Image 1 (spheres, helix red, strand yellow):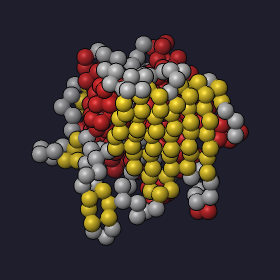
Image 2 (cartoon, helix red, strand yellow):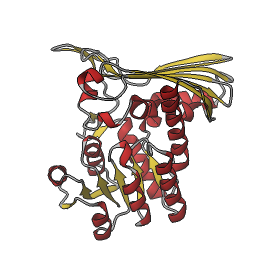
Image 3 (cartoon, helix red, strand yellow):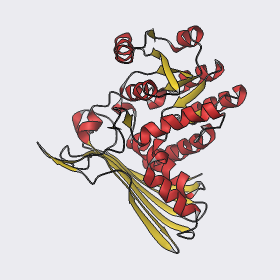
Image 4 (cartoon, rainbow, N blue to C red):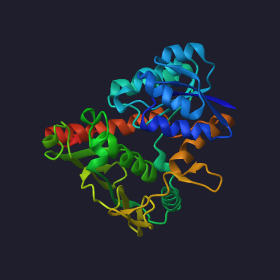
Length: 335
């Protein structure tokens, strides 16, 4: 049984707690959050009595096999490094970090300790992405020429994020797009050009961008366009709009990277996404995100290195920072 700890009892932390609690291979034994009340509420919900406000205290007191780091994007370095140096494997929320200095510190801790670290870019476990990867690896399209990927979310969801002013659509949304594209087509972007738009969120007193569009030139010759915004109107039926088009010399692949074949018409029209989290016949919550968590647990059981690791995730952050720099300066950034 994998003894799991959890750092961060917010929205994502609650999902990790649910995943560990219903796993037959893992046990959630301790929860840590700067807010004791939030840790207590989550612990009570899942029968966890070992609660902490400081991750160092938790690491000293508990015999843990692994820890999920579910803190905000910009606060992964300290808890991840602390866990690794305590001899504990890490499942880290995406992205790995928001600065190269933080990425390098985490990566060095992985190298020095020999522990495992996986960044939870869970979209890799979507059935659509697995099938796209299978087709591309089989050479169905020939060399990839062009990719378009978009991710859009309603403003009502954006406004509920407590630390929204401390992030951007680049880190919050394009991180998913960047890892998905790099996972599917391989290689590394060498040129990055991006534009960001402002106005809607700033008018609400939230100092961050509304949308980002980035064009990436990959070393394999492919041109990738990524489009992300989180200001879609609250009546936006898909709630989350995630789609990809991949064009090669010998063909093309199109996919909506989410389930949207069920529509609900109640107070307003909306599509029902049951791939992320839905109850199975036994009452357990299942879906691609949970599959990603269980993949990490199984890798630990089997002694396999889970992917994406710190090296891959560092490259994603390098691209995200280039997007931010290009959007800020208006210049093409070479990588």
